[in-house]
Length: 98
Image (cartoon, rainbow, N blue to C red; front, side, top):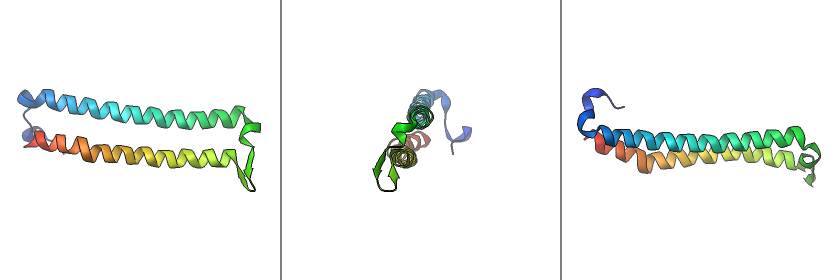
């Protein structure tokens, strides 16, 4: 964790602010995607019941498939964030802390 004694904000404040801004953009972007997935599913569930009840295979409706897709999608978005943080964010923070 960054602490004030480990980083000189006067010299590297702009770099630190840029990294923090980038992290916020990534987090907000991924959050917007998750919210869109969830509310799209819930809107279809509420207003397109005949479509969601479409049977794709015995015991498998479109609703079940899309619901599982929302859950899997949330894990994929989490994985995207972790990979980005490990490859971009963490090395940038380590560079600043030196």
